[in-house]
Length: 131
Image (tube, rainbow, N blue to C red):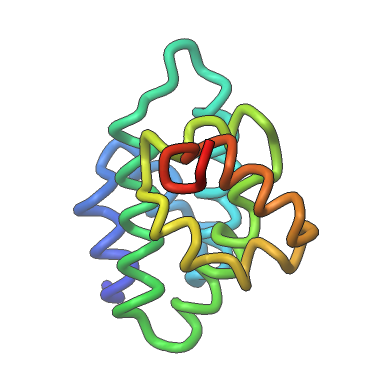
């Protein structure tokens, strides 16, 4: 079993149906599926913050420890989409730090204007940004 898949299985056991799916033939497909699941989970009432946080932490692991294809998959399949929906963006302070969010600026700005990134930054972490 590949390191990226083993790591996902250990960190996200409740998502094993996705991780072990025969359709997940590489890290990019895994991140496409995890991103879709993340979006659905953000709409749950109440949202499963622990699971959302662990998905983020797995993404962070991929960005730091994965090979080039694993890093690229996490960046393109998940990192770029952090503020794709208001309900998703609103949960970010509960699952990641302000510094984590800021560190992903280049990824997020691939799909969103810098002003949108900054607006969410001020809304989500007002104490760190003068409001």
